[in-house]
Image 1 (cartoon, rainbow, N blue to C red):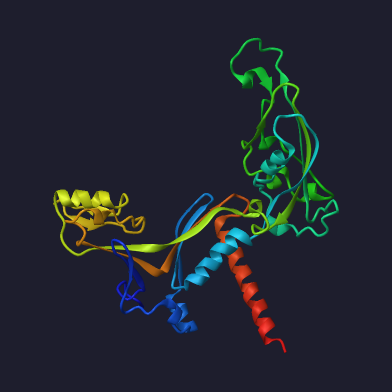
Image 2: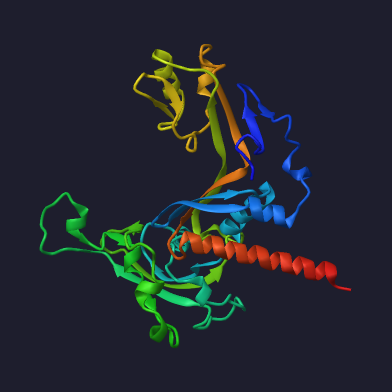
Length: 330
């Protein structure tokens, strides 16, 4: 088992990064499956709603980055692909309106649908979800004078909740509108005035983020290296308070004697502000652990973040299997 001092690190000097003299780089490490099993760990740190934070320990940076790219670009989701505008008398242009509608995230589980084949067809119940948006703005007769447009006009603001699902085939027996409609009902699409009208039909299909960002199932998916902060000397009094302000909140704590100590280095941004003060520049050793990745995954809502990560693992596995089949083929 590696101790904290044996783990591969990058030291952060004032103007440069410095590699550990005993660390020859992860790329030069011979791969051994048994050693990998002992070192590799995934630790869930925080899971709230659609946001997941977990640690991935003991992997090569290329593998960590592969998971990030797969979650962003190749885990599929459902999104509005075709917008058939029968009537649009609002001030927003057809192209802009279609783009805004396409970016509205849908609740539909992409694992229950197939990829759509021929672009020219109308789709089937296995690969397409149809919606419509039919709304007209009018003046309320019972309101005479008001400075509030919402009280003067009916359908002054058009929201995603006004998009109605049109079941295709036997879809109504399998899904409900709450299972396939927009994630949120309060996404503003446009604003209108009396006489403005929208009559639009929408078709949602399954796709992946590398074809268009609207198909990405995550709002964000990123990782950073685990920070490590060590104090080489005792720091007390005014210098201790100054040291505390040099780091992110919660990183440096003060005991009852106003002596500084490292409370939790995990959420430090490694800003190096401490090097601005000559009396503090030599008391801190800052580093990042090169094989410890802190992942943050925020889902849009159709798939839970842990499911998105598992789907990324399945995709990487299938890609590896395909590669092995190709190189082993006669």
